[in-house]
Length: 381
Image (cartoon, rainbow, N blue to C red; front, side):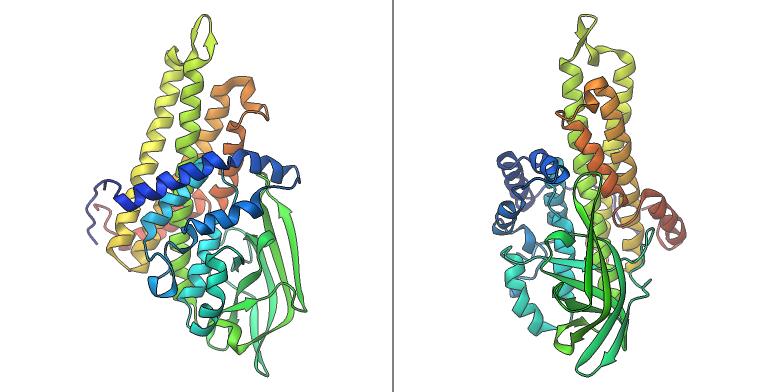
């Protein structure tokens, strides 16, 4: 497939979205909420989420026929990038991922019943699909959905679920009578056990265990959801890549500003040639990430082919994960000793990069998938 490499200017909708997110993070500094989460203190999270919903960001890719904005992946990525640049700890991409699975399923009645509360922020939904580390394929499941009277019984375990701490319900994937299915599970149901663990940035991941959890037929999202989950996870990887780019962009901007003001030997340290060389290298990583992401978005807009999208998403995620880890680590070094001080925000960028770079596949996993899938993609594109 031939895809023209070009850099599209921001359209009016994307520019408006970016402006609104920047205004939001100015009103609600993410660093403050991240530190509060890390320290186990009460946070603004519950108060902030309705503001996110009110802004319409949870309905960006939801069809207008279902009450959404009916926009595209580029708009979702624009919001994800700006929220990450502002260190917002909310699981924006993960919530959009779960909503996309719900709206893409074949249970129209359940969608109409549950979607309004998700879009207005009064309810939260988390997708529980992963069962082991280093997994990219949603079809790699051991969780089973065994037919029982009026529904199925779910047995298995799901791991590393973002948004589990605030979820009102879970979408659980399991191998069922018709293949890989997705099922609506209430965490208060008998047989459901949820364990939370805090990551290095203070945001919780959940492990869900299901022991004969009965799900009625009218709570089945999709009886055969392989293609749906594959498509939505690739889109989520693109949004995660955009978030990582937001970290890269902001961490580099903060570091450049610091080197212009920090004095050593009577002059700004940014005037030292050795540091200038290092910052140019980091700027190059930023621009490579920017253009890799932009090209991948062009591919997603041009084709529905799963193989082409997988290659593009892996290229974007591998580069964004690598760049985020490199830039944030180097940023701390360029800050010197104060880079390790908690009152400086730059350390929070590294912690967020550690978590986001591993979510939905590490750089090494995506490089490997790119190599395996690339023969079906035109490398001259």
